[in-house]
Image 1 (tube, rainbow, N blue to C red):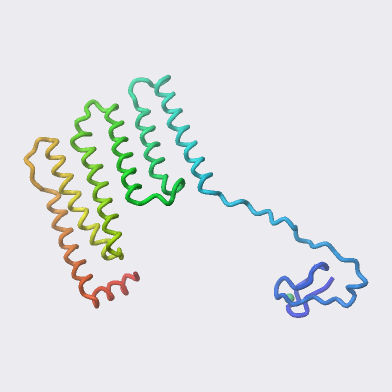
Image 2 (image 1 turned 90 degrees about the vertical axis):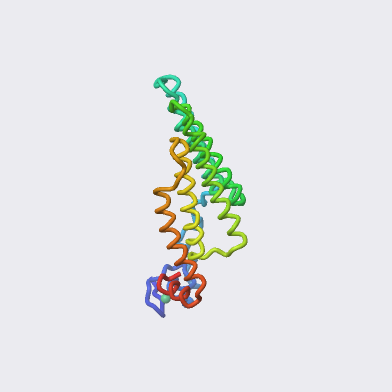
Length: 234
Ligand SMILES: [Zn+2]
């Protein structure tokens, strides 16, 4: 039994240096003793890191199995309505949403947003096969999906020319929200054949304008901007 002369830890006979403090082990009787095998395994036995492609395959298999089994259940057992379209549409949307995360990370953001928007629109269209009428899809569902996609694309385009900080990001968000709310209210009123004017969205608009004015003032005044950044730690 030998011990490290520096830190006193017990050493295995095969060690050439202390595993704790790296002090070399010099045993004067080493020449007389037979060399001992190392107590540690030579094979590191590390688990291979999971690759994106594997995750993608797993996700595709799970989603396909979910959609397929629901379709069979719909056709063979609960055939009263086309309810499986809701599940299949959901699976399709999840698949499209996951493309940039697990399949192809180099896809441009604008294309990702466009594909996401299209998949949501397709999903909404699939729901029309379950509901009695498809008027809601053409007058509200499709325009809303197009509006959200358009606003997201606009933000994406803007981010190419303007460097987004938390403050300017918040500003663009609080410009987008009232636009979305006002358009949504007008679409709903149009669908319900009500006079086109703003009511609840006007309240959202007012609140957002106040926030926008405050944010623009903060962004314009360097001292204010630095103070906010210091207080909120960003
Ligand atoms: Zn030591």
